[in-house]
Length: 320
View (cartoon, rainbow, N blue to C red):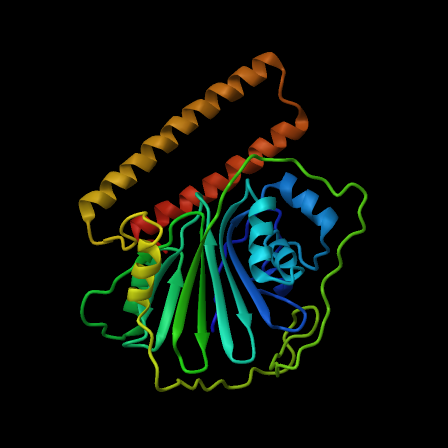
């Protein structure tokens, strides 16, 4: 299993020049790793840092710390949804066990995750945040992929668990997230939970020290591909999803008209939100109801949105 992530440097979440701030975030014995696309609001992140210890300045690390302290991984996923009900998140968590590789994938309203089954041609299942990124990667690789490639958009609030065994067979389970009422929580003076430090009997090859700094030169890696059993992920997805009674899982990303309608819908929503923000800000100034803390929080939020929209504009203009 290979987890890769590239991020822009967001204000206040750690300089990427310091490697410990970069994804993936990995637990002490290197058996769990996490990548996160999104942002955890300062209020949620500040509360969670009072509860869980971290080593980096990046808000995403706290997700790994929550997950690693649960004996049952599914309990860890439940806890994440309980704590991060305001955060923007698309999350991938990889687990390494003796004979299995486990990948947890989930997202909420604010960030996407896509997946494609390429085991027939490339021997891999790939996941990514956007079809354009996939298309660019394929075109840059020089690999000629013949035929129609089916891209799957993961539904929001559905947790996917993919398990690859030593034979190469892949199984899939899915869990519905049931969101109930929001109940504020606090640490209530509880002792802070330290980073879980335990050893593993799984051999780990790493060139990083505890500060995530590279030691020496990278060793060459030679992949081995198992022969034998091959599961059909498309059938597994269809079968599991049809049991939920929520319709067709596979989205046809080649439907240009549908895509254009969706883009225009989102642009209209953004325009309406911008107008609402302008009116609310003007009212707050006249009413003197916006204190310094609220003012700086508003500026930070608008700065983040501006960066996101500038990135979208670069993608649309082809200026990557």
